[in-house]
Image (tube, rainbow, N blue to C red; front, side, top):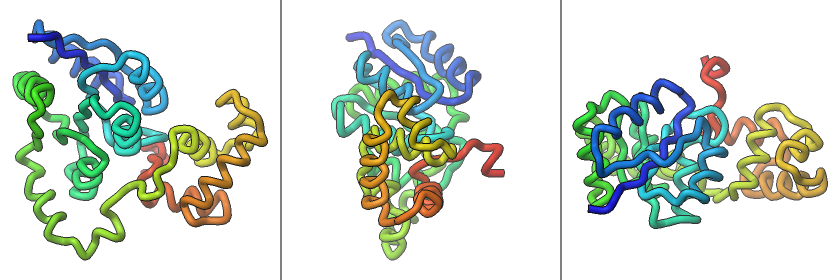
Length: 224
């Protein structure tokens, strides 16, 4: 069997280390890289082209569902496994719609994670049994679909998400441009597109909408 190349994206060092240690027990699996956030992860994934990405859903800044959507748009051959501590049906439904091949809780065992990795590599869709009822409930409750079925009907680009992340952090156009190595004029252009796609006319309303729709996650200490 070919080597399965895996990349890990999670903002918690211990989680990344745990997954890495789990997967090292299988000689057919190789962890080729990791990142503590979606932005860093997307850049490295584009370069490394792993077979499978383990992706945390709730990270400060661009969240795992948005990152999954962007990965599937750019590199559809990469398979994404979403990891979370939160068995919320909205995350499950939205994650699957974004293109994730699996959705499992972080209390998965070592043997289960290794089996899962092989299953996904072999094109088998996998869902943690603990959250299957959530998916069924969500599928039945289609009346709520307009409100919460999709985290990003706006289809923001990666660069727009980077700019939006800067807005949420309270950065000025100049600060955003300096961090992203683009001009203030380009930042303004991206903000104009962001406002249009979100259907808002101010930074404050853009922040409220993107946090409400979980396009961007705040730091846990800020969320309370």
